[in-house]
Length: 240
Image (cartoon, rainbow, N blue to C red):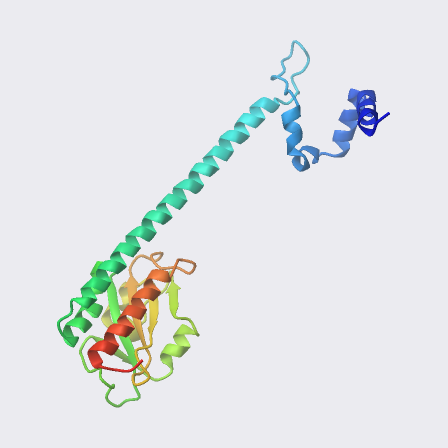
């Protein structure tokens, strides 16, 4: 007799009570072996007449589970679609910003675009360029609309990161001046213009506490920071 025939004989010799006893001792059997559900024909809901009112309706259970799984799939799909739309929208905005920066006719207009136009184009409430200074004149950067910080401040804030996204915060007056009370979330982009210029950050603030939050994609805003760096070097004729 082959092993297959022996297994069939052993299975045939099992009584219903023995199967029920085994399942009672192993309540997680179906959880560990979900394929077994496909081998069973579930009973219909019992009733008082046939005395099976306590028999579980596995078919209804399976249908309910399928409905639940479908709802989860739909929710996940909706989240993915919304994320893709948001990413495409952000990409289009960054592209428009880059084109606007390239349209600047002089350095003052370039700074104006950064400190005024970018907030509107990126649907934020305020955008600021912040640079460090040792108290003397800031090399190459004397335009209005740029806020100044003491040396070492930016490194302390950024903690080694090129992009910092923060939600549910209070805006800092050192960055946003009189508009600090408006800011409840922010994106800080490190801008390393040149070896001849001090560290800088490009800050975007929003009244929406969840517009910027840790975990969001940073590829596009990081790209914007690199574009700003290169544009600065071109306008000021600076080395890398």
